[in-house]
Amino acid sequence: MIQGFLFDLDGVIVDTAKYHFVAWQRMASALGIEFGHEENEQLKGISRVESLERILTWGQLTLSPEEKMHWMHQKNQWYLECIDQIGGEETLPGVAHFLDKARIQGFKIALGSASKNAVPILERIGLLDAFDAIVDGTVVSASKPNPEVFLEGARLLGLAPEACLVFEDAAAGVEAAQAGGMACIGLGDPQVLGSAHRVIQSFIEIPDPQLLVDSL
Image 1: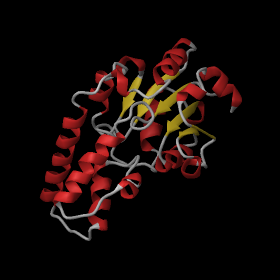
Image 2: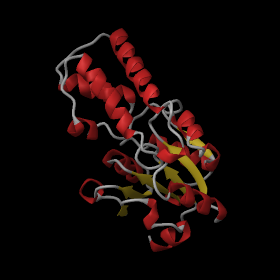
Image 3: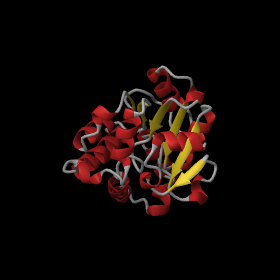
Image 4: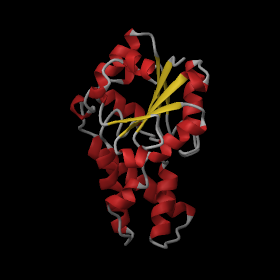
């Protein structure tokens, strides 16, 4: 029986993925590496470290550990500049209602994201208090599709993995949920997220959490 929900952040709760793209593209350009939407799609759901490693591999570029730290910090500064002015309007359609309804119905709620900026983002959009637990890149180190972030979320909620339902917009996230023994709802392209138990375009399609759980 599903008793808890685990949410990814970017592309599920809030649309900040576009700002990651801007920051990564700016960094790649500074390093002389081509970076477009196709490459950006491959970074969804994975950590900042792994994202940098992939970009460097695409550009056939080798950097020292110190240089890697510099560019990860620089990319994050550019990203933070982008999100500094975001507010509740950045929350994706239907999310706030779904979270409110889930809490009323007694479901436990956690965030499971590779982002190291999850808490300030949730504060800016006014949804930090909607979560019983936050698991982000400051808590875990393994990137999706490793299930660590979701398993830790389940642990903090006091639930078995099979009692949790994951919401993800990335193929790596869906794979992580399944590797952790959890059901998963994909948000986005069915061709990318087809292995999820169900794929939707937005939370407007599933306004009642209990009915969603009953339908699985």
